[in-house]
Length: 586
Image 1 (cartoon, rainbow, N blue to C red):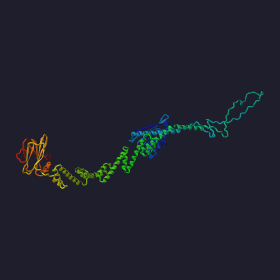
Image 2: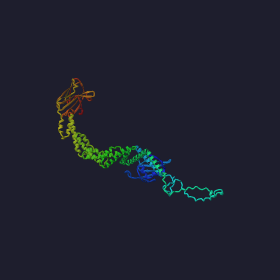
Image 3: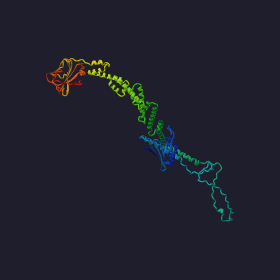
Image 4: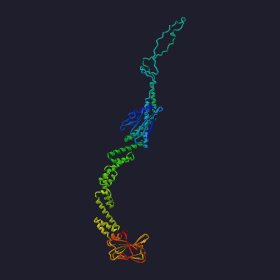
């Protein structure tokens, strides 16, 4: 998006062109002075060093004498053109971005105001220079070199005259009647010319009233003084505005050159005059620029924390966010290395993982990860979370832990011991027994294993559901002489639900009778010859667990009112079958 500004100047076009190409005037109307220029196509304009900004040479692109010139820098073309307009001319400037550059919406307005200010300043100075060179009136004649200083000549021409020789007088006729009358002589008849002779007296001239040479300049001076006094109310605001505009443009130029401190100095001077346009906004912008430059210097000095704190205060300003990210990465790296030295590998890994793409970061992260897993495993083991510790040791990084084998074994044993203890607390004595047995001499596993074997109950009903008392009875008769122990359960069938009515333990050679109401029942039997592990796991893996069958296709026993006997495992022609049952579902 191009910027186009123009100004009308009350001078001939050639005068404006001459003023434009006179490098001595640039510092008067433009932000930067020009040291020299070669005004032609392919020439150059060399800007002088000013306000701490280095000198630079900018090439001239197109050039048409008296009409237009293009000054090309890296990011934009500045095109100046002059064209006639009545008795004056118009100077136009076009700023055309290039090289991928462009104006932001706010930047476009600022730059337009600045460029318009340049042209207005140019017009004022150009008109003043032209007026100063206007030719003087030629009405006054040259002063004769021989005229005394105290005389003045106002005539358009001075004629030197001489006195004529005395004319001979005609002979006088005698008076009276004797006079002879006749024609007059030729000399007497000719008219006598009127000769006016100016004689300059030799003595000192008398004093005269004040001449025009004195009072005319005096009057002019008085008039000028009066005009000056009367114009003060109008000229003073104009001059103040021009001064503000000059300071504003100077500040903008410094700001564009990233001389933010210089721009702030100029803006401070401008604020003392009441400010101009968006100078307050520019002041805030330049302060951010100073903060950014200070942060960059701190980064170069390795003071990343100070730089980060400064950059946090100017988010979104230019490339401040990128530098802030760089600072954070450097801070994380420094903290990560320090945490590694302190042995806090978990925290060190987190910091180093956010330290960017430093060459040694990956190796340090891997080292922290391995050592960090070692720390995590120890922490989990202290908390009794052995299964989680095992999972960590089984990861890719965990397998690189130096003493992984020992840790893994300890976690395995501890986890098994923990599981065994939990099973024991839940009454799963056989599960606990097997776990403690697998641990061998780990801790007190051998002693705990023995405690898992429970004392066998005497023959009795260990449980009866009080909701199911009745007039029917079932006598259960296990084998008397095979040395087995029997555990029996009776369930009543209610729809799809099986409700436990009675649990019974029968010692070797014993029998038991259970009373219950008439109904449909499911009967389950478990027996064993060895250790007893309680009613949940009964005889463990060495027991036999069965569901009795009333027929080949049914496990429902219909018991009416009356007394029934059930003989187990001793009748060769019995009417009750069996089907193996899983212990966990018994």
